[in-house]
Length: 116
Image: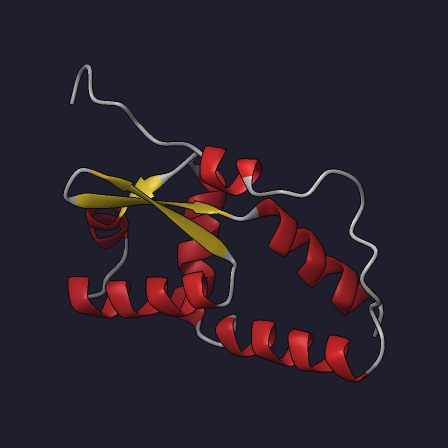
């Protein structure tokens, strides 16, 4: 809608700590973290949602539903899993939620996988 404020990745970026992520990429805690992130990434539908969000600055749930061959309730469940894992953030925009990738978590996934 013209004139409607479109949330961006500002919520994710505002929450980012300054400086590099110094958490270890090996060890028991890192292994548990990688396993949890891999579980969240373990659905082709969730990977498709992440790819869609990577192509756009941010998306409302309805926009995601329009792009995927999934019911709204299924998309909402997948968004919840991704949000709980920290891979995406949701910013409330009136009655809707605008979703965006969390770049820090994506960098963490890359680091953990690179440490294998």
